[in-house]
Length: 199
DNA sequence: TCTTCGATTGTCT
DNA sequence: GACAATCGAAGAA
View 1 (tube, rainbow, N blue to C red):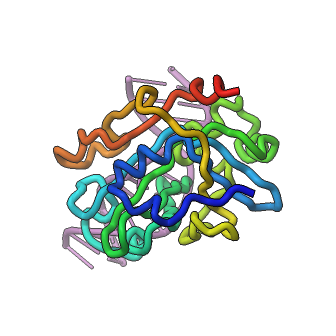
View 2: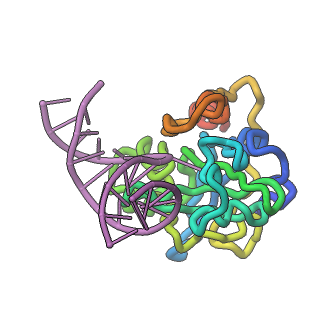
């Protein structure tokens, strides 16, 4: 059984952690079945100064996990129907996190298909709320330690990703944010074909 | 207490 | 490309 990534992995600057999470494996053990996928897309949210971060207006009941220790899950409900999954980064008291926007399904495909309503496989995990649904992630998993081997939700080492295949751009769905935050290139992604080509 | 709106998705035109 | 779904958190009153 592979060990999860260590807590130290989450201590770097949010954008750096977001970049380094590409290629790693998101794992979820619920319903007695292991579901996992290779992380393809992430976004970084960096502190109260970041006009797009949930912590932009200070600490609240909802964003409290962001102010906690690194390596923990920050999962929140939005649009009245969707759960979005993040991992808290940076030392405690500095509110920052990385949102998981897409993964490449690897294990537990049957369960994912059921949870995603039998849509085509390429549509199972190509969005932050979609992957949460495919993995069975809800508020129940909020606050879990992603570096704990005993945790039902965790992140394990995956396949290293060279800079040559990493793309960056502005974050999605944050038109309300003022500049320069709206345009910060804190969204990172890799084409799924890169991993499909790996034996 | 009231109002607004979201780190989205699926459907319809 | 436009827009409804759906509800709790956050901010205003």
